[in-house]
Image (tube, rainbow, N blue to C red; front, side):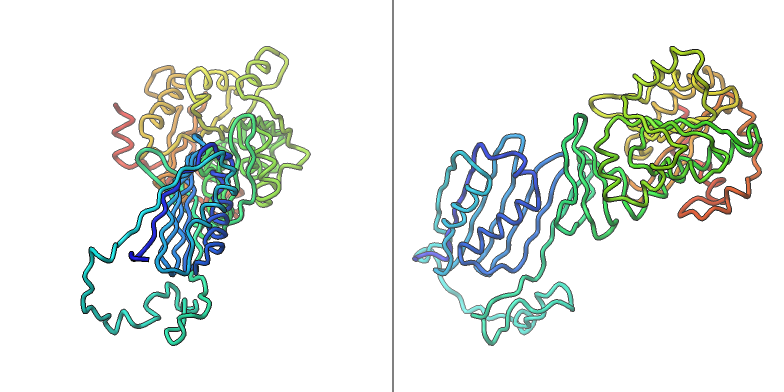
Length: 451
């Protein structure tokens, strides 16, 4: 070969979309292709992007293989670059075309570094470059090869597979262990579970992280316990509290609500059974309350449930309503019309809590939710029937998450001593000091809520 390397550019058409969107499958296919070509693998790094698509690189001793997929187009673009005579990049093409079930492919081979155009210099590597340990990323890992016998089989230095949540301005990448624990396309959304190194198991809905083993409690505790603190401070009811949860199919909100013996009944309205299915299998700590006899789990669209409930004047009202649901591109629900229905379902001394998105990143949405609550609960007046507050949740965008309490009776917010029975509970995040601090808003949030 009169060149330093061979570069085969591959385009695969009409591939099976689900295969192109499965980061573990893509990684395995690329690894197999490298092995079939006779290449010596050193490193693999693969990313899954939100909402779909995979990029990855297989670093081989002879150069590299790279891929990017477009599941929505059934298309994969692949670079196969090899040096020397020991590897055959065309074997990679055959393996990958079959693996992705492509109807056809297009290829072009180029010779890279044609020798007649090059002049060899007298470069000699430094002692640092010669030190084989300099390429090892972890001191506990074995070197890729022994410099005294470069023909021996190389060990793979590392295998990296990543999930990336991304919008037009922000991305969060989580390295995971490779095996996709759960994936199902429900009627409403794609539900996935990954096992990550930083956050443990992660629940992902349509490419967005919604709960992780490591920090879900910071979200669920702050959604539930502040409203219970306010409500139980007044002793409106020592027992027989009726609670409505909108959303929360992973079970975390119900778990926190059912810590209270005073709760008589919890009605939880979840649209997507698949969310609960995934949580029951992979998040036992979240779903521990789903079999509690006090809990009635109803799989129904939220507005449909509310409309039917409001038609029956004999139905009891709720003391506490908790909204653990988010707007989606298909169905924005956290608006004035929605909150008015919840207002009508609340007892006269009732209180509502809702998540309000990330105030720093999704500022307009955060403000819109707060303003909708104020229009419904404050009737446009400057009274304290709506209180925004914050929590720190590392896995959610920017790490700062917004919530709000709203009530028909503003006296609920005026009695400020804590209920020691609540603060004595063994919780991950919430305590007496956090309760008071959460309602102290930074100036930038105060300012955006004034406009």
